[in-house]
Length: 502
Image 1: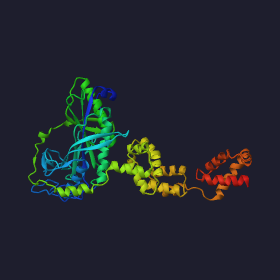
Image 2 (image 1 turned 180 degrees about the vertical axis):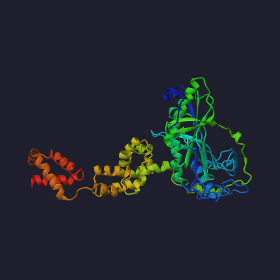
Image 3 (image 1 turned 45 degrees about the horizontal axis):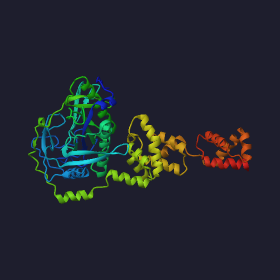
Image 4 (image 1 turned 60 degrees about the vertical axis):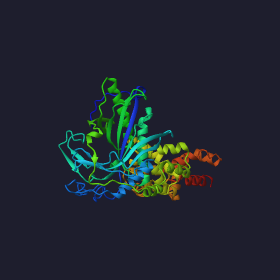
């Protein structure tokens, strides 16, 4: 657990007295087969230090070669963000020492990015749209991964030793940098979350990345500063590094606003620094003093020639862009027949892709929405996780609904099957068999249960015989209880009437 001693100002109070300005740098790992500058595989989960070459290890004399697919993916991202694509751009060396950057510099782009001057419209929870201006989207390579062993925080401070895995070193990245995001006011945390989610959806639609945040495919550096009024100069910013969930992006902005307000209230000055986000305490802690661009001593990469995309090729890429997520959602809403409020709830819950895949697996749009926005949404809230993090797939929900549609189980039994799947007991069919949850379709056992219920409630039997069918529900309820909810209520009603009136 992280120890946090920061003084915080109530968020509403901080917003009432300060104007927040945010900026977000999103890094997306591109889904190329090989790395940015060499032929090492760009996979995930391999044994440490096996997906490397002399180039990704920074060995003397090893020369880089640009990954053409990565350039294409960067252009696709730039066009989707309404950016201008540079007629010519080049790579630069960003000089700093980290043990997971074996060359002691990162090959990136500085003053000549491949894409610049764009924007993206972000839809907020109430359906309103907030435009975020994009300063640049540039190509670079990822660093390796440090694992700090020992200690209580998983960070280098207090660790007994550290291990370095260079498999990730050299993975192609595109970094998207916003201009200062102003005018969001109290909704700044919501805007930050919605912006990162919009980019994640965009990456998936473009098929340039799996964009799995839990794997670090998409990471956000969140900059926050406060100023007295919207007309005041920008305040000193902090940068919370490598935030990798939508909820954490929102919480990090909210926390920094409250923390910085307390610093300013106390007469102090906000330090320009990087900060670490702690999921366990929903707080940030100080990292290192933030460097300015000149501290990195950028200079042109001498081993790589400039990139000059053919304008005709850029237009071919533009013409091949898929349906953008916002347009895609509007089309799905029409196909599914959801009301505006229903679709907005689905979008806000991050359930669009889940429901789309569930419908593709055979469920009706209404049934898919019922499961994801009902039982599963409640489960996610109880477990304090995102819907997509639940241990269940759209295909399993489709199979579950198929069991209901075929009459194998009813809705009540389906909820028990759902519990079993979430508990790791297997596929829906396996849970039905293992728990013995199939609907009782044999009239023999049903008639036995009906006869017992009728014998126990003769007064109700007489009312039914007299034409008053209102109390029949009590008989049906008794039978359902006796069969552990596994009877078909409609069939039970038919048999009760046959028994009583026959």
